[in-house]
Image (cartoon, rainbow, N blue to C red):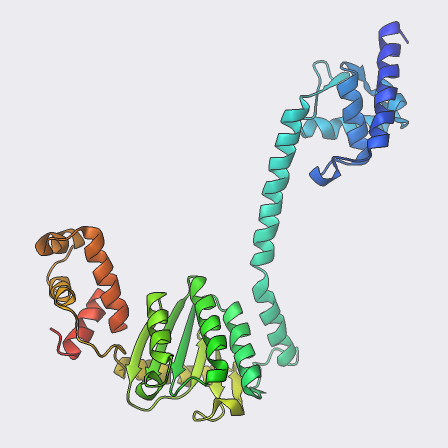
Length: 341
């Protein structure tokens, strides 16, 4: 061993000792203790070979070579001749390892977040007896359990929730119902809601329905027959055991043969319902409604009314929500049905 190699070995040994004292500080970045010791050695002794690394780190040459190979893949050491190695800039190394680790963690978080539906899928397996049959209806007893069930099924919903309010919302459940509905809407999912006129007459329900519409729900009112139900993603439904008394409990329905007629019933009620707002439009809203029915483009409509495109679009969006319509064409039809146009 020449003087240069001996000096490198002595320096590497000192570095390895200090590294061992510090422990595996790079473990959270995906670097093992042995690899970290080799990296510290290469930092302290640039141009060191695998044999000297093995001596300094107290390991065999094959293990040292394997660690150096991994560190090269990570960009932590470099070599010009394939025999001697030097550690790369620690600041760049930590930055690169941290970015790689963060990217991996973000991917893991996305996978974990997207796995929430698995619980519902597994629960459905359990309820169906693990034999491939569609689950039988399950009875949920008591108001607290019904509210909890709606909240749970809303959490796992991914597309659209269909809701009906045939009567006043009980004061004991009002806050829980409001919280569940608003949490659902904050996730950006679709909601269609039918509210009976007698429910709108109850204290607090009118403002609550208006709040739902403002947050993006499509809301319609009706004076006709209305069942109490909630349908999630067109595949799971919660149906009140007694439409007049939700405190008696509800049935959780999953069988496609039962879901299909419930969907048909909801769509029939929806087609006959109207927007819940009874007040006629303001003069400005009336002008916007008339322009909506005539102008093909927002720019043309705004110019005709002498307002900015942004203001015009804001009026249009508000009218669509008020009328409980799915789009502008539907809003125009709903306005005609009310005699506003």
